[in-house]
Structure formats: C-alpha cells, structure tokens
Length: 78
Image 1: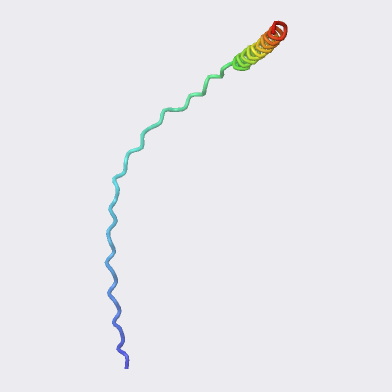
Image 2: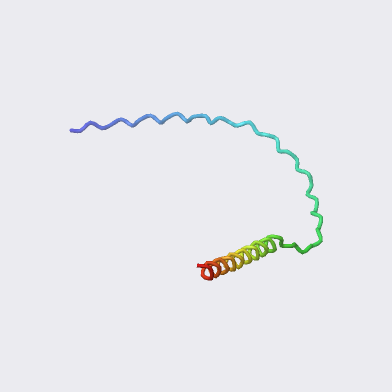
C-alpha cells in the first residue's frame, strides 16, 4: 500500500514594506495664455533658391557663349 503524504504546512506570509508617503506639491493655478496676433511669415529661403538658380543659369549661358566664341575663333584662324 502507498503511504499517504502529509500536507505541507502553509508558508508564512511576508510582511510588505510600506513606502513612505511623499507630500504632494501644490501647483500654482494656471494662467491663460496671452493671445498673439497673427503675423504672416515671410519665406526667405525661396528667394535665396531663386537667386542661386538664376546665377547658375547665367553661368551656364556665359559658358556656352564662350565655348561658341572659342570654337568659332579656332575655326576661323586654323
């Protein structure tokens, strides 16, 4: 015959450590934000990019004109 197991004794309950309670800081009452008047924003970057694009275009046109003049000079005096 099998021996009957004796029931295990219950485990003792561990006492939980209590954390100290911190006092809550009082918050200052909220003040309404001041309404700022809307001012249209000026976009400066697009103007800068336009100037760079125009300079690039004129540099390209100038290079093409100089290449044409150089080629025509060499053709005429060879």
